[in-house]
Length: 71
Image (cartoon, rainbow, N blue to C red; front, side):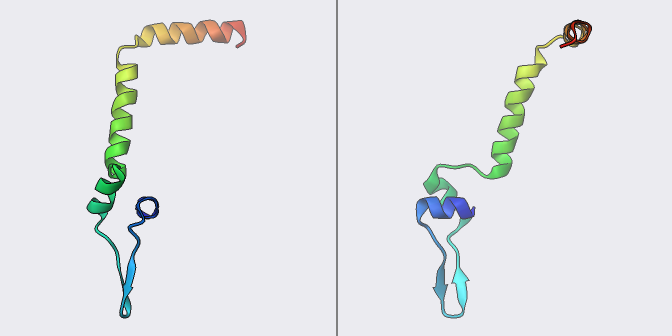
């Protein structure tokens, strides 16, 4: 969130004895960013889709061949 605030210039302001921070949702929206949890989940889903179609048996056979070849 700190990086998003700096990127957008939406910095905290001191009011009296306390600091007032802009709302996280507003900062993320202005920066066109997603919450970190959502970004991580999207990445996990991308990786999952990439490996879902792979044949585990074929991957194991390929690994055995690489080991035998000394790679």
